[in-house]
Image (cartoon, rainbow, N blue to C red):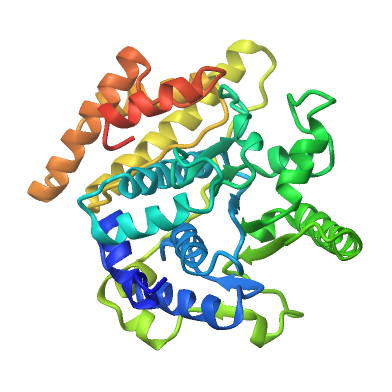
Length: 372
């Protein structure tokens, strides 16, 4: 079939995301098609690493005999899993839009890989705790599938101990994930134990595959902006001069990321009242920091604390704190917007992410408060 070319990838990216690919994204596809996936993707945060799913899916559509039907992006952060799942579902929606010509071609090719003529071009699966589980995807191993998962969910399944999976279905989950699957392991420096486990499984399952002829095994691609000293340069794919000169990427790569450490001196608490006073002091310092950041033009401000009452205290202080001096119209606008959001947080709890109902609260809060 010649209806798809590697050069169509730029149009595919535009149809899915609304933007042209960065230089590294097109170059990664060219590398994957020429020599296979690199062992390590050295890509900093903010460069669009999630788009590796698009690269994997497009490569599968071009050469299904070479590339895995299941592409799993694994990261040990629930909130990032949610973001990856959201991106994959936008991709799924684009593939179902017949008005997008390149997406229609990709969709047609992916549908042709499934034994069910009515199957969707790609299935999107989210695996993490705190959500309703749908394991029907394991029943269609021939269907192209995008998986967004935490480490424990995929890891437990590969080791025949899937969380919430019945004993009789554990071998099925392990088999589906161990065969014909590409693992994109993000923030690998935070999941070294899982990386080592995957390495052992990759070797073991490859030996079984050679004896039994069960097809392609699992492949692991590490993603981290902190390569190790023993990584060979030939195994590493990273940004080049074209990427660093790109107007959008250059702005992200060169953006200031100030950080400071502030010690909050508290008193030894002899009772609950003393502990509450210490938490109130911490909330006050956090609030002052947020107001100061708003005054310098910060557009995204997050206050992270480890107690719910400290979070409420910070929100109350943000909403009631008066402006200190004249800092210009921009600062006034940021201050006003910040106080408006924090008034809402203090009054209703919107914007406070925590507790067992966090998976339900977060999408609602994100929709109401853009400063969340």
